[in-house]
Length: 291
Ligand SMILES: [Fe+2]
Ligand SMILES: [Fe+2]
Image 1 (cartoon, rainbow, N blue to C red):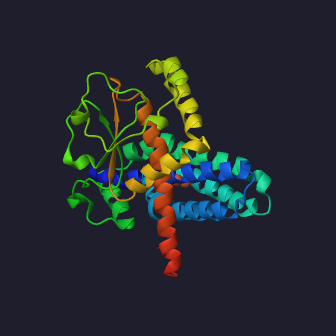
Image 2: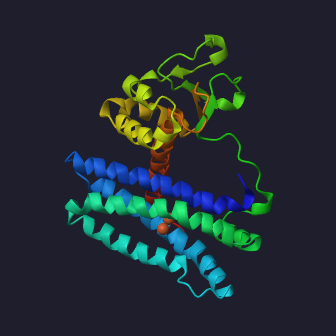
């Protein structure tokens, strides 16, 4: 992890959690179930994140714009305005559940816009001392001395043919077909999650064509939302809360393949759960999140 980009990465991780929670809320609403628990969770998650952005990070961005004498509207102001709108919608959603799909869509969109447009801008705009200042405000210990992250909880990707490493943790093959020529010993699998792979029909349609990847991702995510798969996704998610889980794939293209999409979906689930657990701990101890 690049030392000074950590605060932005932290916020990007929270965005993934927010998007995962919003997707979940929308599903619960569409299934006609009681949304109150999920709605409260999304509100807490979003509010905590908005506060982190507004108190720790946006002021630094605004100062940077002022110092450069930029005449244009600071993106930070646009972000604050978007937060105000989202807060109002989050508040109203309890009385007006019909607005939940709309609320979820703009919540997801806001997080995606920040990831795509704002973060690269900030990374390019801010100089090193400013990034250090953000890291300190976010309560990260001396960022200069930050050690590389140890193999911790979460989902990683590796090529099935690469030699296993002790840091892989739980090794899961996520292809539907066994990789050609790979022996069981060399694979050193903990499990083969065949059912989580894309359907044969979808795999054949995609056929490793990079220009079909965006549509493949959409269709595969849809397949993964099948309730019949929830148990298996949950098992892997729970395992990745406490240690590394490595998803193994055989495809030669390391960027446009199904394991990348599956990792995305699983990480969203894991981060949502992780935040939920943290919030439970907060509530248990009757403390409020740091201001
Ligand atoms: Fe935001
Ligand atoms: Fe954000």
